[in-house]
Length: 230
Image: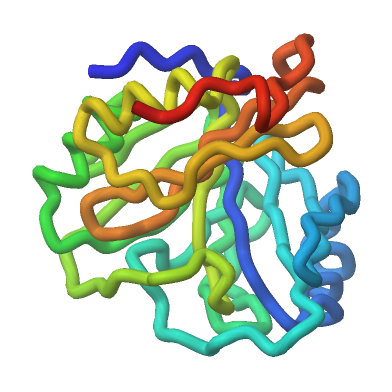
């Protein structure tokens, strides 16, 4: 099992969309989430970020039209809220609201193989078992049920597309996960003071491995100075 040092006691989630105004209405007006910041990713993408407890809900807004594809394995969110309710994003991802004492954000997933799901999130990512088919990082949790899913070729397709874990060393974590059998979705690269890459779980879902200088307290490697994946 890879030995992963997490830089933050929660994971984040990421959407891709062409409907920024609808997400602003949902997160800012309806749910009253605090806006965090804007990050320019290049390629016509602006990332808007909202705080949900210790997690960040990221909305990657594209200048160009994104492909509309059915959902993959990540199907929706459950957010800690004062009142129980159900809403949905402009692209149709369900968001359930309910009182939760020790969880800020729950990522709801389906998987073709519950045992493989447990191997990836429990053994490989090292998240703590938490309830039936659930795995936890601090105040965030991913929970799966068995069902049909599909492999999403690009995390930039419209919808709820990835989760992010914050680590102290992106390159070493990516290499260790690759050695343990994880699929490398995109090798590490540096953008500003963030170094990040993607792995994919056994259902093909995208997981961003992120090293942020603001969380680690150290500069991130440049693309030229970083080691290559084995």
